[in-house]
Length: 332
Ligand SMILES: Nc1nc2c(ncn2[C@@H]2O[C@H](COP(=O)(O)OP(=O)(O)O)[C@@H](O)[C@H]2O)c(=O)[nH]1
Ligand SMILES: [Mg+2]
Image (cartoon, rainbow, N blue to C red):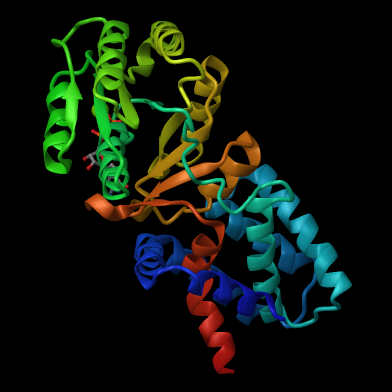
């Protein structure tokens, strides 16, 4: 069976809404890539070194990341040889296949995007990342999703540094219908976490979502603060935090990757929330993050609405990027 057929089969197992969300969230990235690739396919009659060089450029422009592009193109070359592909257009399908493979690898199961839940009670999820990347917003969206799944959720207002941050989280809580544990602005985030964990235990909460501050100007202090917060949580709930989700803004491109490296050095990041994919034409950053950090992208922000944060899926992502081109090929 062709890869495109397989891809469509996988996707059709999910609701049309999910496919549509990925499609509309990736609109800018799709038109960017499609345009570049269509020009490339029109320009070349055969698949040669120059073809691959231009392909590399297109992928690097899409923020797939230099190292990742090099690996990918090496694999493409091998596959093209193995399949004896002559027509540049046919490379399209191989690219899609390799992208899914690159993301999922051998050991990456289909459901790696799911939150790691504590089977014996309270699950604690810590959100970290620099200011403005979308931590608070993502907490609101994930709270909404968990609540819709029938979970009892509580929020912890751990960003006591930024003016208005506590209120912003509370507003999300009210919108979604979950409570927020807070103290005053400027208070010790670790103390807020302590309160929040006690409240979560007393109220038999399923999931506690913890917001944190993200001032990167003072890296050492920020990392110390995160460590303290983490220690309080770990002391009060054995095995917690069950997830440390690093939130990255996709529109910051390779810069986001640098942030990610800084944070992973300071705390054990277990997953990525990649926000604002809808706002960039360089969605390839998903692949760079996956391949260079070896941390799964668990959620992607595909818009500003409450249900626009979706569990990441490699197949939906690749289909969102290349779906139009697949249709064109079928029509031939
Ligand atoms: N378009 C778009 N905007 C987003 C997304 N996620 C967050 N935002 C916006 O990014 C801005 C900063 O978000 P916020 O949650 O306050 O960031 P924080 O400082 O990390 O807590 C807000 O205006 C959000 O509406 C997304 O996936 N797509
Ligand atoms: Mg915030």
